[in-house]
Length: 146
Image (cartoon, rainbow, N blue to C red; front, top):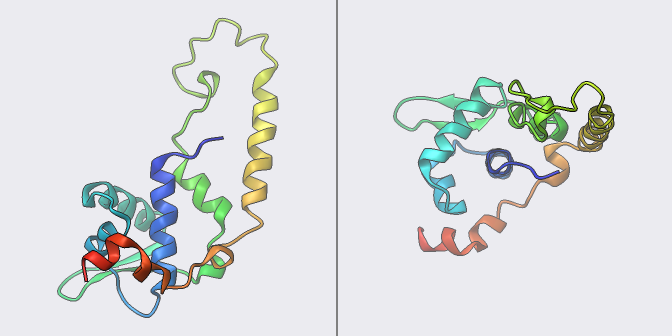
């Protein structure tokens, strides 16, 4: 299964925020560290905020931070929320035009495989994959923008 870029960015933002829990972070700084457009990150931040994974603090000195501790953020939940609109095969989507849909035996097998994938992810939290905040200072893009 290939995760979407949107999911990748969700995980990157959460990793960054988990590594910098002592402060509020900004979209601009995260965009610079990962070399991602601020426009794309705005969509990710909105999604994460809407799903109560992060908090957004408005105003001067504002920014974003994790809403829960990294140990309370389940990877299965994070990926499932980010991939909720993904349709990997046509028969799982609203616009199913497959002519063998009524007799096809593949969908239940794929559903079982997806459940196993998400169950494997659900065994881990953001804390389990947390990076040391110092790794971000070693990234080429981060050192260029100091």
